[in-house]
Figure 1 (cartoon, rainbow, N blue to C red):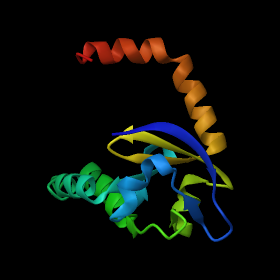
Figure 2 (tube, rainbow, N blue to C red; figure 1 turned 135 degrees about the vertical axis):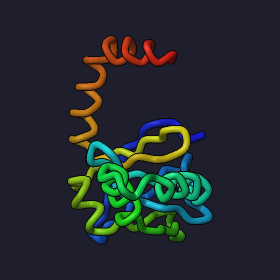
Figure 3 (cartoon, one colour; figure 1 turned 60 degrees about the vertical axis):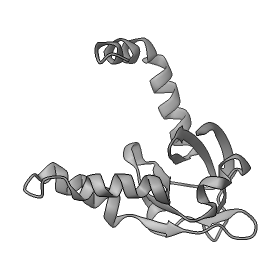
Length: 143
């Protein structure tokens, strides 16, 4: 179970130290891809397989299905952890997420999200200010 929020730096070569708490997720390899809200998603290999199978099963004739599959699959890259516990975040993904030096790595149960720190703080403030409305809408869904 991946939970928590950690601030880290991306070095000049695009390497990011994975928080020690999350290293088991990436120890056997992982997949990094474009996420939603302009963050990056990192999945362990087993979770990625579950998601990828769902994506390729989406109806090919529907434009939204094709677009979402392209977003997730075409942007995906396998990553390995180096001896210092770092992963290399490809240039095109850092650009997509607007990542500068400071980032936040957040655990969301079955995946990690990597955010530019400024974007994370803005997103979090917006979400926290709307938490009552969000909770009410989720209540309608039975959560």
